[in-house]
Amino acid sequence: MRWTAKACLSLILCEILVSLPSCRKRTPVGAPPPVRPEEISGLQQELQKPYLELFEISPNLRYSKKQIDSMREYLQKGEQYCLDQFKGHAEKYSAEIAQVQKELKQRGSAVPEGERHEMHCKIQQLRVLESQATVLSQSAIPVAYDNRLARLDLIESWPVQVQTIKGDIASGAYGNRRWGNVKDIGFREIAPNQRDDIRAGEEAIKQMKQSGMSLPEVKDEAVVNYVKSVGERVAKHSDLRVPLHLALLNSKEINAFALPGGYLFIERGLLDAADDEAELAGVIGHEIAHVTARHSHKLMKKATIAGIFYQAAQIAAIVFTGGVAGIGTYYALQYGFYGLGLVLNLNLLGVSREYELEADQLGVQYTWNAGYDPTGFIRFFDKIATKKGYVEGASWFRTHPPFYTRMVDTQREIMFLPEKPNYVVTTDAFKQMKKALVKMDQAATKDEKNKPLLYDYSREEGCAPPKKFEFEPNQPIEQLCHSPKLVRVEQASESAAQPNK
Image (cartoon, rainbow, N blue to C red):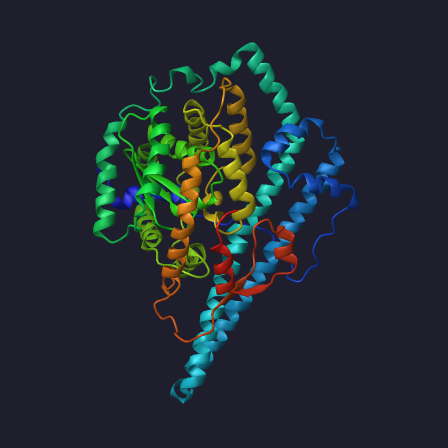
C-alpha cells in the first residue's frame, strides 16, 4: 500500500486532536452549582493527591460506598454545571459577534473609521473568548473531571485489584501476560517488518518540509544532543529494529509524536514540563513503542473511511504552521477546527485507544530496561493532567484511553517488572538542559509576541491586548467554573514564560 504525507500526518492526530464531544443533557445556564455534602469533604481532599500516592494509601482508606457514590454524583453534577456555564458563554459571545457584524452590514460606509476600528476590535476580542469557551466546554472541562473521577475510581477499586496483582505475582501467572517476556527485550518481535515503514516516514517528512508544514527545530546543540542521548539510551533497551531519528521542535506545546520508521519528534514545551529525566525517558519510551508495534502501519490498514486522510492532513498542516502567540496554540487551533468544520473523531478509526494502552505497557518496559525509574511516566502523565490538562494538554488527553484505565494498567505493569537497583530519576545533564531552556523560552516568547494567530489573517492592528479566561496551574476546576475571571493575554503570557522552579 502506498503511503502519502497526508496519510502519515493523520497518525499525529492520535496525540493532538480532540474527539467529537459526546451528547450531554443540558441544564439551564444559570442553575446554581452543586453543593458538596459535608461527609465527603475529606474524600475531596484525597482526590487532590497524586496517583502514585493514591496507589500506596488507597488500600488503607476507609470510605463507605455511600460516600463514594455521593462524591461521584457531586462530580457529575459539577461537570454538567461547568459545561453549561461555558457553553452559555460561547453562545453569548457568538450572538454578540453576529450583532456587531449585522450592524456593520446595515450601516455600511456610514460607519466612521474610528468606530469601525472599535467594532473590528470588539469582534476580534469576542472571537477569542468564544473560541476559548468552546475549547473549555468541549475538551478542557471534561479532562479535568475525568481526572477527578479516575482518582475516585482508584480509591474505590484499587484495593481489590492490588490483591489480584499480588496473587498473579505469587502464582507466576503474571508471566503469561502479553509481552510478559521482559528479559528478552531486544530479542523478541513485537511486530514484524519494522523496516518496511522507513520509506513512509522519510516521504512524510520530505513532503512536510516541501510544503512548509514543519516547525523549526531547536538550534541549541547541547540541548539537542542531550535529548538525543536520552532517546538513544531508551532505544538501545527497547525492541526497536530501525535507526532512531529524534528531532526537537521549537514549540511551546507539550507534545511528542512518532512517524513511521523510527522518526520521533519532541516539542520544547514537553522539556519545560518534565521535572526529571525519568519523566522525559517515559514519554520517549512511549513513542518508541508506537514504532516497535507498528501502530502507524496498523492504523492505516484499518482506516477505510473515505476522505478521512484528506481532512487529517489539513488539520496536521494547521499544527505544523506554528506562529501562534498570546492565548496559546491550542485555542487558535480549535478556532481553526470549528471555524472550518475540521473536526475529526478518531473513534471512527476504532484503534487509537487500544494502541495507546499498548504503547503505555511497552514504553514502561523500555524505560525500566534502560534503568530509569518506570514511575516517571505516571508522574509526568499525572502532572500534565492535573496542572496543564485543562488547557495545554486537553487535546492530547481527549483522544486517549480513560485516565483510570491508563494509570491502573501502567501501575500493574510496573508491579510485574523485576526490581532494579539504583533507578535513574534525574541527572546533572538534565539540570543543565533545564537551565539552557530558560533562555530559549524567553527568546521564543519574545519572537512569538507579534506573530498572528492561526486563521486570523484579518487581524485588526491597534486593538487592546485580548482578554481570556484566567486559569492557573493547580487551580481547582470549581474556581474556574464558579467564578471565572478575565485577564489580559499579555499578563498570562508573562506568567507562563517564567522558568520552572
